[in-house]
Every structure is written in structure tokens, then in C-alpha cells.
Length: 215
Image (cartoon, rainbow, N blue to C red; front, side, top):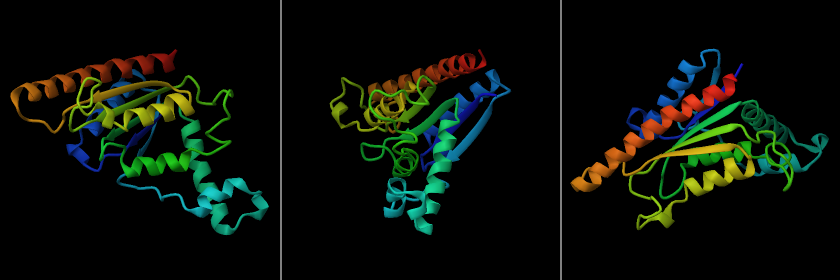
């Protein structure tokens, strides 16, 4: 039975473009693959703790040497990591916050990215290698490669490093640009066009992932 891990990270609830696009992906995926299951985490509504010294150090010492706090941190992080490793596909949605990802999403990534568990040595094949990951992003402004602020985008490059690089997943990034732009008219039209293209890409990607997992 195929399992989708769905992570939302926008604090904007029903107003969120990234959440709306991710919900459309999930709805199409569930329609195409009704036998699949979804594990859902809203890391904004139910935030994860930031890494502290115990959470960092616990994996660099023998189990018998761990304090109670370190043992609890290890169990917590291991459970989150296993949730990721058990996913046949991953769906992550995020807005741009101050030119990077939301702090809530970074907290989740910090918890699940663990040396020797979800991170491997260079040259080793990752347990998640080749599994589909879909990242859905919403940008209030314009950060396409030809845009003046293209170099300010620290959302997509970072998430590509994580999912395609470190986790070796088969990654598709779908982006809606200019989501906060209503004028001038030419930019508003570009915003609408970007949203339509993102919605079409979501439908196509969901069908592709469902078909891949069904086969």
C-alpha cells in the first residue's frame, strides 16, 4: 500500500497558496490511488521543537551513556525519521518567508535529517533514492531566473539540496510566483498565468506519482 507523507508549513491557513496547491495534489493523488494512505503533518499548527544540545549530541554517544533527556530526544527524532523513511512519496508545501523557508519547516528538517539515519556518506545510496518528492512553493514576488531578485531565492535551492541532493529523491518543484501582486495589470496577469501553470503542473505530477506507485 503506497504511503504519501504530506507536510504543510504555511501559517496562513485557508489563505495559503502553497497549502491550496498541495491540497489539490493530494486530492488528485487520492483519486488516482484510492488504496494509498496519507500521513499528514501541519508543522505550523503543530510545531516541532527546535534542536537543542541534547537532541544534537544524543546520536554521537553510546545509548548507555545518554541522559534521560538525550534518550527522549533520540526516540523523538528517530520516530520522525522513520516516518520519512517509510514514505513512498513525499509532498511538501512552503511559502517564501524573508527569502527562505518558514522556520517551522526548518525545524522539521532539522529533526529528521540525522547522520547515519536519514543522511548517508558521499558515494552511498540513500534509502529514499529515486522515490518521488514534490515540493510546492509560493512566492509573494517574482523570483524566476530572469527576475531582478532571482538571486534572493533561498527557498528552492535549499530544498533541492535537501531532497534531490542529500536524500537523493526524484524531485519536482512546482512554484506559483507573484502571489501577492495585484497591480500593475501586466504583473497581475503574470501572477494569474503562474498560478494556472502551477495548478496544471500539480495535476500532472499527482497523476504521474500515483501511476508510478500503482505500477
